[in-house]
Image (cartoon, rainbow, N blue to C red; front, side, top):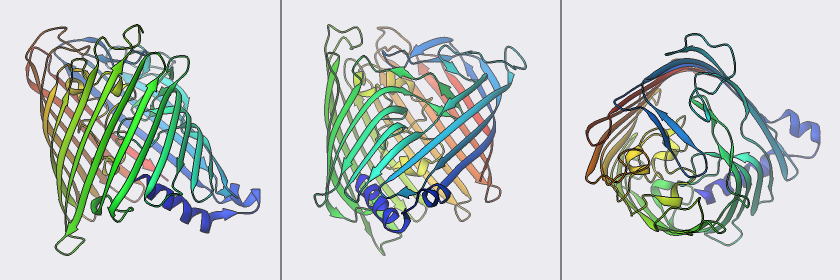
Length: 425
C-alpha cells in the first residue's frame, strides 16, 4: 500500500506539477460534504471508559442526538515539489436525548464533542514529493492499521530502493475530526510518539493488495514510557481468470514493553497476535480471523487506535485491519486483558457499487479491562457491526452504522445506531 501511494504521487507529479503558483492554487481538489445524522445508544451500564492513558475517554450509556455537520477542504496542485492542504469541520447539535435543542458550544461527553457545537481544523498539511521521498507535516491521518486518529506531526517515506519503503512518523498530538465525532487534540507526552518501519514487497503487483505479498517490520515508542516492536506479513494472489477470484492471508505479532516507572505506561508488558484468511469473488470479499492479547490487553500498541481508521471508506481498510469492529465498537478486544477474539467479516458491492455493505460478527473472551469488569475473570462479549451505504445520486448517499453487543457475560450489552444523509461535491 505504501509503495502504491508513492507510485500514485509519482504519476500525479508527472502530470500535475505546475510551474506557477497561480496554476497550482487554481488546479487543486476540493472536498466538501454536508451530513445530517442521528446517533442512538442504549446500554445496560453507564459511565466513561478510557481509550488509553493520555486522556481519551468515551461515554457509555443511554443517549441520542441529531447533528448537522459540514466539512470543507482544499488541496492545491503541486507547485514544483510542494502542495498544501487545509480543511475544517463544523458540527451543530440540533437535538439531544436528554437536553433538547442545543444552540451553544458544550462538551456533553467528557472531552468529546458529540451532539453539541464545534468548529475544528481537519486535515491540513504541507507536503513535499520528488519521486522517491515524500514528507508530510501538519495534521493528517497516516496510512497504518495502528492509527485511526488524526495526528499533528511529520511523516517521512522513501521508496528509492526497489521493492522497499522506509518510513518514519513523529506525532505530538492526536484527536479526531469527523462527522460523527470531534475531540480535543491531546498531547502524547512531552516528546511525542515515534514510529519507524520497513515494508518489502517480494511478489506480485505492488499496486494491487489482492495480488501482492509483502512483509512489514516496525517499532513505536515514547521515551521513558514504552517501546513496541512488531512484524506483519501479507500474502495474496489472484487466480482462475485473474479478476474473478483471489485468496489472501495475513499474520502479525507485536510486543509492547512498558516502563513501569511511568504513570502513562501499563503495569504489565503485553503482546498482540492477529491472523486472518480472506477470499474474494468479484465484488464480494469475506474473511475469518483471530486476535489475541496479553496481560495488559493491547497495552501501548493501541495508543492511537487499532483498526477501521475511517468509516467513510470501508473498502480501503477492510483488507488491512487488525480487528474488524468500528472505531466506536470492539471495546472488549481493545480494552480486554488476555483477550481472544474469533470473528468473521464480509464486504459486498452491489448494483454497480451503488450499494456497499459491510458486516462483522465476533466473540471476545477476556479477563477484565479498563472498559468494564475490573479484575473479573472469564468475561465474554459477542458483537455485530453492520455498515450500509447507498448512493441515491452521484452526490447524495444514505449511510447507516449499527453496532450491537449481546450474549455478554459480566459486561453490559449495548446497541448503537448511527444513520444519516451525506451530500458531497
